[in-house]
Length: 504
Ligand SMILES: Cc1cc2nc3c(=O)[nH]c(=O)nc-3n(C[C@H](O)[C@H](O)[C@H](O)COP(=O)(O)OP(=O)(O)OC[C@H]3O[C@@H](n4cnc5c(N)ncnc54)[C@H](O)[C@@H]3O)c2cc1C
Image (tube, rainbow, N blue to C red):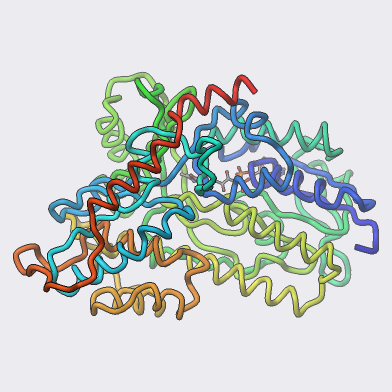
């Protein structure tokens, strides 16, 4: 990176502070300045409490240990997501979508084989929960870091308080990495003759913050990429109907701390249940075309047993889709300004980190030309669509009663890739090969797709299944049970892991 650069970030939500910390850290050997501008009056969205394993990659890259940030953000470990009530198939009322581990290599091939055998009419066990260690850890409330004498790492993510995480990152970026923090409202952007952004104009009009490169982390407002640069927003409203959410925090659950997010289907969407060390995060993601905000709040309160409780609920509008190009001229959009897919798989911060990491790689390699920018944008665009398709499939597979669920179950606004995956599953094809052939395994691996279809019980009716023919190379389920149980013995109680963090 030859020239000195001034980086200006608009927005102090999780995305903005992630950008500030990562740019300052990775460009620390170069003469750069990083300034973050945010308006306390506007505030942050303050939700978003679950991650994928990518958040661990982010903290590892910054060299920040779990014992430093997790207690500060009231964080817990997460081994995956349980989907409850999404399917009415007997025996498939809930299933667990695990984060993957190297140990899955011992059980996934058998799982894939069994799901295909069942799809093609054999009565064999094919519920995902029985095959994966992460599901067992969640069920037994064990934490995902094994004893030292068990040298296998398993993938895990986190649950955390979004406000506290932002505060931790802000403290780290400003005190350790020299990021300048300006608390002012931005009125707009001044552009130069080339059309690039030259400066942010502060409210009042007489002060500016000039820069060489601008990060738009201004949330759903998309003040730079959308308002100033006019990059079009591509809505996913035809694919995904949910456009609103209610957040309603609750007391911490009694007993051992869970390490799974629970997503439960309700009448017009789903609720999240996220265990933190100090409280439980709850919310309802729903489609306002099918239920009013008041009715949704009542349904959520009833579901949580908080009908008469004096706990205020926060109502949020969601804009689901993505900007056509994330990187335009000297501006990179991240976070909600860049795009948003409803939070069913908690992917937003994953995309923030992936976007930033790729962009910083290009910066450090002086790879800032139009050709690289175009391929970068194409890759991000495809990533959003790949994640969207996996989320859409959750809705398309449902057979629940009610107008909302029927509309989702019959929605034919599907991408060609999703149609191909569905066709492969229902025609008894090799799903793992199909996912790889379509190139969508980089968003969700074959294991995730198998868990989704099998977790819904998308098999022929039980009455139509036949005994498997002799000689079919089925997996010995007693061995699978022993393998999972034996592996699980090496993992400590989740609460013990959390306690260790505080002592470290
Ligand atoms: C219901 C819901 C659930 C979610 N769950 C998850 C989840 O489980 N996992 C996950 O990864 N993500 C989740 N997300 C997404 C997650 O909340 C966001 O990706 C994350 O919080 C980052 O937001 P942000 O920083 O882009 O925007 P914001 O938090 O909205 O921050 C925007 C910033 O821009 C500033 N700003 C805007 N305009 C101006 C201006 N003119 N002048 C000065 N400052 C300005 C604001 O003050 C603020 O600091 C969820 C989102 C929703 C809506």
